[in-house]
Image (cartoon, rainbow, N blue to C red; front, side):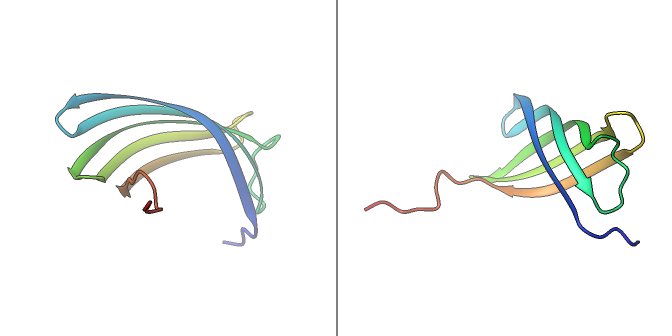
Length: 97
């Protein structure tokens, strides 16, 4: 398409629970400010809700799968999302002496 430049930033809350060894479920809600790229997002506010599961493979490595819906504040934009990702977690990238 002919989208051009687009930017967004958001603030949200994520709640989760450990249901089994190395398996977590979570839900997340976000309030997002967005605009540009000839995408109709009403007044520039998006609301997003997602739910998913996270499986720990080895120490600090996870596979996440979630489904969500993002809508503009007045419903002129709607997107369903399915996200599969590999996530790495570390305490810090710096080594102390």
